[in-house]
Length: 196
Image 1 (tube, rainbow, N blue to C red):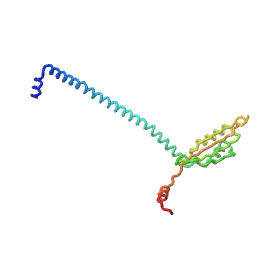
Image 2: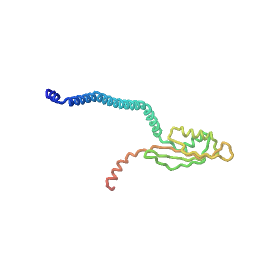
Image 3: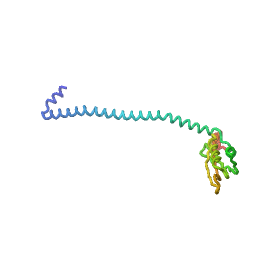
Image 4: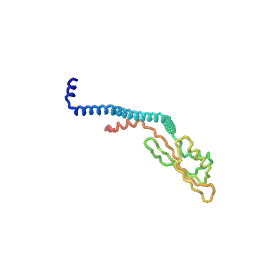
């Protein structure tokens, strides 16, 4: 400390003033910039914490909707637990309850949908049908509780007759494909290269 004092006393008046001015500027910079830097850093932390708080609130607020979606998905999957009935008989039964007769029905080939589902469809043609019994039949098909939908509906009015239509109706049923239990073991034996 003594050496520093001697060095300072050995400086010229002009150099002392410049050194004191430099030290004052340095002190002002430290006094002003350090709090500003800390304040800026804290502000960034606050913004980050606020963003995290909002994200947590969004997740907690969405919990109810996620549970509803999960329940709805479980209900939909539950519809596929039991296979849909044979379509021709099912449609015939719904038509009979509505007071209609089905003169013609045609089953279509099964169409796979992915690895888990198969679509079965039947096309039915009705002649001289009134709208009210047709709507009652369609409602019975849709509300059956099975994974069955009306996939096609073609109405043609019959000439000058009032409330008389020819109808072509496509009904599809979706069934879950049963998983094959032995598929892994047969694949491993066939890929081993050993011929039976």
